[in-house]
Amino acid sequence: MNFFHDDFQDKFVGTGAIVLFLGSIEAQTVAVTGKINDPKGKPVIFASVRVKNGRQGTSSDSSGVFSVGVKPNDSLLVTAVGFNDMMVSVDGRSTLSIVLTPRVTALHEALVTAATQGPDPSSQMQATRDEIIANAFQDYARERCTAMAPISLPAIIPGWREPPV
Image (cartoon, rainbow, N blue to C red):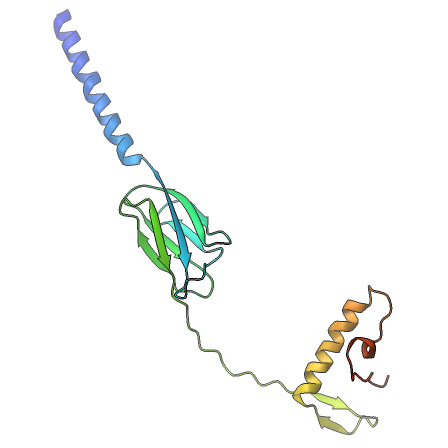
């Protein structure tokens, strides 16, 4: 009876060890590194790199380089602002080179108009593009200069005229 018990125990322990070993192979992760570029070879910075159907993920650095732990048969979803999303199969590789294609989006036309008031509030005239830009810059410069020592805009911008107050 003791012989049967020892034989059963040896087979059970041996089978359990094989199952655990095969399970650890399946669950084993490897480090995958890669570089993400645009079609011109420039690095795509801060792209998101996520394991499909997983929790692992990272982002590319300022050189477009990333590293993430994956299973050998995982796929990576790579996304970046201004680029089309891309799914990349790892297929057991440890190094990837990824080229993202730019996302082309048609923008609608924007029409900017403004009016300026002359000395008489009832008389308005159409502002030119240069006047609109100059007025926007003037507002910006006034905001920036309030914390600085008093500086007049004519001293900063040659040919600048202060508008009447």
